Image (cartoon, rainbow, N blue to C red; front, side):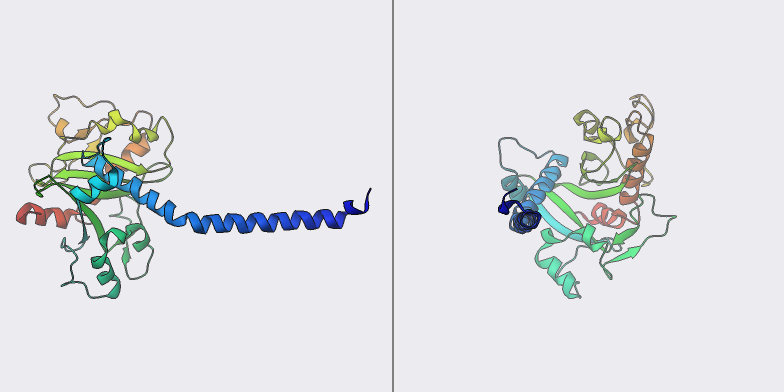
Length: 271
C-alpha cells in the first residue's frame, strides 16, 4: 500500500465528496424552486382549463388562462367574494391584491385561517376547512362568464384527491370534472384519470329539483333510462372506497359547508 492509500485519506476524500454533493443538491433545490413552482402552477391551470373545456392543444396554457379565466376568492361561510371593502386582516388584504397566490391547502394549516370540522359533517375527511376558497370564472370571447370552476378535495382509499368541478352558471349542470393530484391505485381508483370516465360527467345535474345536492357514483354503468340517471356517475370498477370518496367530496363541497352559500347567491343574483 502506498502512502497515499491510507484509511484516513480515503475517509477524507469520501467526506469532502459527500459535503460537495450535499452543497450541490441544496443549491440546485433552491435555484430550481421558482421554476418548479411555476411548472406546478402551470399544470394546475391546465387542469382548470380542461375542466372548463377550454384546453386547446394549439394554444399556450398561460395565454388561454390569462385571456379566459378570472380568479376570485370566496368566503365559504357567507358565499361572498373577498374584496377590499370586506377584507380586514392584513392577510386578507394580501389575498385581494393577488388572489392567484392564495393557497387553500396552506390556509388549512395556518392558525386563524381555518376551522376544525366536526366528524359528523366532514364526509370528505379534510379535517380542517379554510375560511376562503379560490374559484375560477371562465369567460367567452365576449367577456361573459359561462362556467364556474370549483376546487374540490377529499379522501379516497389511499390519498387525498385534489381536482376541479366545473359548472355552468345555472350552478347545476356539470361542464367537466378532473383530478390533478392523488395517489390512488393505478388501474383501480387511479381510473379517475381515465378520459373515458371523465367524459361521463358533462351534462350531469348536481342538484335535484328541490335544490338538494344529488350527485353520486354507482356500482357499474349508469342506465340512461333510470329516473336518476342525470344524477348518477359510472362507478370505478374494483375501487369501491375511491368511488365513495369521490361521491363524498363532491357532495361536501357543493353542500352548505362548502360552496353551497356561494352557489345559492350566484343562482339568485348571477355571477
